[in-house]
Image (cartoon, rainbow over all chains, first blue to last red; front, side, top):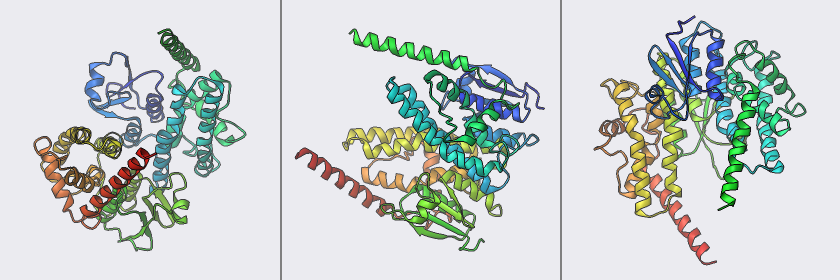
Length: 236
Length: 236
């Protein structure tokens, strides 16, 4: 296990991208210091470590900074080869894992983000949630192929796709509770719904995830802020 | 060298993402069959090989499809280990290469794309070109560090960042001629301007790139189409 002084993670509590890195570090049993960033008043360390994007997560390993969560997870896999492999070993399987990681972040996640901007009525929100479920359907097939009858995309243990998709699960779960509708709909994506339950209770995930309540509070704060803004606009 | 029947590349002439894959294949001396796609009437093979994005490039190796140019280039590096390495061997250098590849595609290239949508007057275009140059300034520093006094980001030969950025050079060059302004401005990014000349005449790049004239013709066609659309709109 690496000494905690060697590895620092600059992060925030509710970022799925930070959770992604924490899960990868836990999986590889890399001891690390978590440095909580205040994103309203970013630290000198964050601005110096990630001058291009000025965002968390940033991993600092032996005084060198690595930024962008997908880059960091691949780095962790390569810099700490002793733990379980995150990416598969076969070049074709590696390319498949990278392809779906890009799909999740670049095609599927933008739909999730739309929830914040869409009109706050039942119908508009339901359309986005429906699209989120539909966007997971191809991943149901990928899971069935990749997991090979085992519990995870990575087989017996968490792999790259598990971590990349799994980091959104707490946010998905909180959204389901908040809006009273299923996203991980068992009638459409039964294997993924099962996988999600296994993922959440995996040893490497426990503790990395914020509580559902924290998300629910965030949603309420965001909605109050929106309502206040709308009211102030209407009164002008 | 792999037999040409093993490796097929589905592509189009003017796509920088296709050129990216061709350059990687050339660098690794992988013999391959180039299958020209008509993107106005996509082939069954393309739709079957890339059902998610339905886009070129697609690499087909031993009857298996690999999609998305960055994923393909990394696949080529791993599946054909005999040629020169595209990614560095050290985990930190690999993460740096991946970070800048993502920067080039996700932050810098969208500015280039804005040229097609921006108002077609001198001032609007100049602002975009200026932003393109500014976006390359951090890469000037990366080049000076990575190349270590040698010719390429990859040192003596082309590496990942060379290929990812270099694939845009023909389009940049044609844009400079078409609009009569420098993007690779020697007063601001002298090392990159020099690097671009070396890249274009590298053995692995020759033949992969379309001629500048093909781009210029494309620009003219696009502008005529825009002008026709604007005229038709104005007459309604």
